[in-house]
Image 1: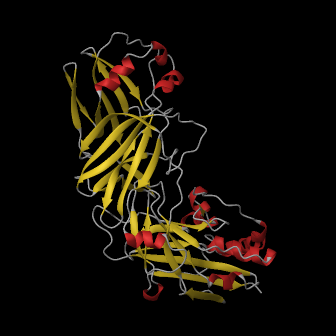
Image 2: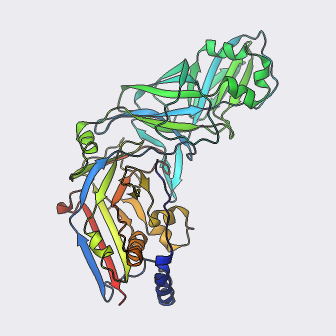
Length: 462
């Protein structure tokens, strides 16, 4: 499980606070590692160290929390460079009308509708929520969920739900930007782009035939229909596609049509549980070989969303800065990594952003945050440190750039106080949300050609 939080000891940062207050009197926009290097070049007394001993390899990604995502995704990819992966989705139709009695009613048809979620705003920029080839033909099956979803429980990307009876399927291209029309009771309606499943009438008739008591409350209803599970099964043509859907919007719903002119709507509202879970079905050997290695360094490494892969980065030289035993101010600590040329296509674009995290204290595949990332997530926009972490793709230089100033400052101060060096290296990974759509990248992690760079600029205080 990826944990975005890590315990931070503030005591070691207090001497730095007084330095910053003094500095702030001279320069308004300053914080640890930001504003310490003048724009016109150089900081008097500053020392810069560049590290070329950098070891990188692809490793397993940890499970991701997927029961409270900003929105949801569905689909399957057959990526020629990364293999096959899919995003499955659990949804819960719920009641908005209570006390209905469908005794002796006959079903006409059953439709499951998911409204597409077209875009997510990230850093003021609209990000279209699709990845892959929209012209692809894919197959998605729908099953009844055969276990309760517990609202107090946390669910992760490696969840393996119990599937019940198959109740329908979809085969086709997704029509992400295409509106559609439906006819009901003599009226024609034009609908916003949506994914529509025609479910089995047997499933609908079974719902109508249930005791009227299941329609008295949502607790009663969910005891019968615990949820539906959408499982993408195959890519029939093209490279596949994954798109955003609104699984918490009443415009997404299960609708029963019966007795020629009547309908009963069960929306996916705010009280509905919604859980994504992911499968990495296959990966090429150049990825799995690295993931199976316990050491070594590779010039090409791979990050993949949906729990596919992340990159371990070890920089042994940073230990020499931490273990100086001297009071220093970290002016800038920076990691830059480039995309491998030719690895991006129109359908498989580069990730909008990547994250720089660290291994947990046990040294496992589990990721935890560095201080700079916590500031990035939770600090108001008017604080300059919020913008310092980085991670956003810089298209003009074909790279990602991260700053870990505060993280390194904490490690330096902690070592002075305790004599313990807690530097564990880094993980580079694709975030699971913001944006929600999957992405992947081949990274040039060859330090000899400038593919990956790590540098630290610091100033001694005594």
